[in-house]
Length: 187
Image (cartoon, rainbow, N blue to C red; front, side, top):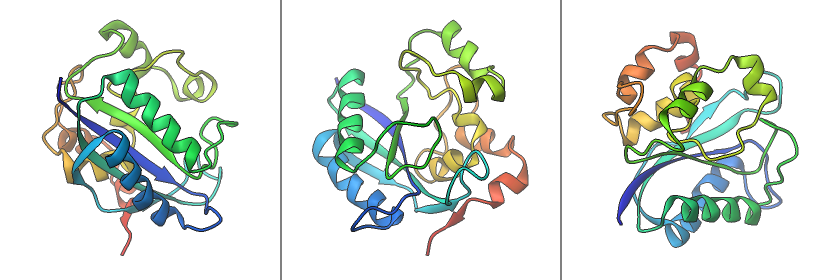
């Protein structure tokens, strides 16, 4: 089954040979080989590290990929690419050479609407302390993050969240202007 997926890319640690921006571009080559055809890609953006003070600024982007893989296959490929680029998962929301997040797969809700709603409505304190033990789609925090929505608007402005019933542009309009202004295109 062919599906369109949206993937967020982030990096805030320079590898031995590449800057965060170069790592995003190099990882897109690997995604196109392992996951599927990249049909659209956003600009690269510079964004403040989240949470504030946790490390250097990030380079972020979002891509839309056409794939034949099932969702577990996509996730497996993304984790393999992260590992190949030196990603080590030690601290939640810590510094990383490469972070690849599956944001959405068409209008799939995974595992179910009730579980996803619990994570969407989780307080920030609990978000920082708890990690889901299963894949959640769409990503439960995408509507809260300018560093995701700004580049996502480049590739899927009209994608509608299947639970919140808002487009990317509508979710972006709900965010504070100062958060949006901190997401700056990299020249």
